[in-house]
Image (cartoon, rainbow, N blue to C red):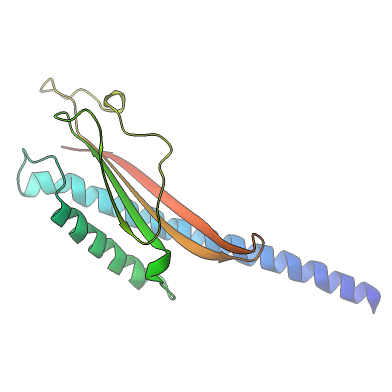
Length: 159
């Protein structure tokens, strides 16, 4: 009986660890798809509307944030808006620093700020604009005694 209890305890701990890993990896994959689609929308809007407007207005950011939040809500079974956050950094050749816009209840972080050195020189002799979109979401964690934040970022060169 004692051996069965010990084996059962080890099996339960391994099952809990695997379950948490699967939930984390699945959420990361969903965020990866979401953030790549979102940054692609930002990039392509200049091709569809105004090719000279490289900055992202607050209205455009709010619309993108709403689209992404609704899309992520459809992808997850138990979406909680209090555990969701979005961050957009946009660097244009006209500005020295990247413009930062955030939304959602959760604060997403970036490892390094966007700079001119990250941009490439276009065939027209100017620096290309950069867009980095970051989305984060908190998932329950059994081993860290609370919440674990899963985050995904995509960096895209503008047109």
